[in-house]
Length: 227
Image (cartoon, rainbow, N blue to C red; front, side):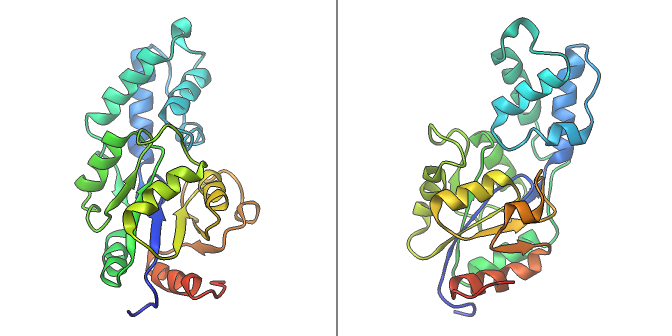
């Protein structure tokens, strides 16, 4: 094998493999428009991403003046209907993602996605954007009764990929906390949606360009610092 022993590589989705901000913001502001509220800035909406769709919608409604009627459920259902009508519209993989995933799979690594995103929309995106395959493992926001940073989400996904060392690749504090809980190395996708600084997150490696990921994985698997 070119890069050494095979690893199980578990990726976050939003802000890691895909730039979904335009789609998330469009759906959120469409919901607010239906409620007669002004749109929120993209930065405000994306600051709410990472703890599941329920927290995202609740946060957008709070920012826009509160939850109408005090009941989140109908507004959550409406947001999901808007978003899931076409979750790929405006969403693209980050540069180099397709080529790098193909190369990693060819080199024998197992590829999985562990995301807070609801399962139906996450799977539609992965398949619609041509990322599944080579991705074969999947754990979404509705697969278990827990969300990240609970390590059970990570290991549920990794468990679908056989044996071998495991690595978490993500863009946020939640992903870093998941890696710590699972006691595995964490690679930070720097261009993603994190709120904290790189220094505060303290990843084992930083990923600015997907072309660098195979070498980072090889060094982590072989027990050497990727810095």
